[in-house]
Length: 282
Ligand SMILES: O=P(O)(O)OC[C@H]1O[C@H](O[C@H]2O[C@H](CO)[C@@H](O)[C@H](O)[C@H]2O)[C@H](O)[C@@H](O)[C@@H]1O
Image (cartoon, rainbow, N blue to C red):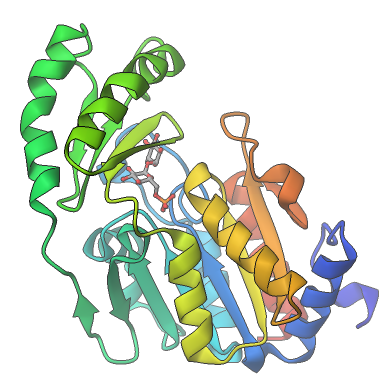
């Protein structure tokens, strides 16, 4: 692959460079998979107002027809991801699968079919207990996002978001455990949900059914670590080539040491995707 065909910055690992060469050399055998918030969509205070980055979407519309698979693997419900990314209305996305709520939900652009199983009753029980708990902790201003299968407590926008999150983690873990759920931390959020689904299993399932050889995965937060882990295991076993992209932030550096390519925020991901579209000549 000529140097000019490598989207900058080049991978800092040999395994990442090999995966990028495979992607550019044989895009039909490749899957590009993305987290949504903090990766495709810039982080903002109100989760209802988040939107996918225009330039990333435009680049993906160019890239989509050239590759075997596009995927969005997100903590968002699929219907929310569809609304915030307007994925169903876009050209070039005929190979897109959205796996929502960490893989519990699914939508495929090729058929328009969506699978949204009913939420566990335990989540509604936790949701009902939250106002009293937050009141008792002096944290009544915490934003509650009810996703049906999960409930998310947001501390972004509070005067001390990190302090409020630290205060919440213990009591929420206890409440979640009482209901057979788990409290998972993220970027100024704690999410109470069923821990039996994760992005690693979701990604593995999609790889198994699509027969792709090269996978790119881009993420920014702790919920993306299982996808990194799954790809690392598959790569080390020689099953796939994998390129791990970290969309890094001061808030969450956990993915950086494990990434092949480190980008700083969704704007830099948009730049990288535009260069990739040029390299693929799509
Ligand atoms: O898997 P993802 O697509 O990254 O979804 C994970 C969670 O992201 C959302 O929260 C994050 O984005 C918000 C909007 O920018 C921001 O306010 C918050 O601080 C971030 O943590 C979302 O609201 C959650 O439901 C997702 O679980």
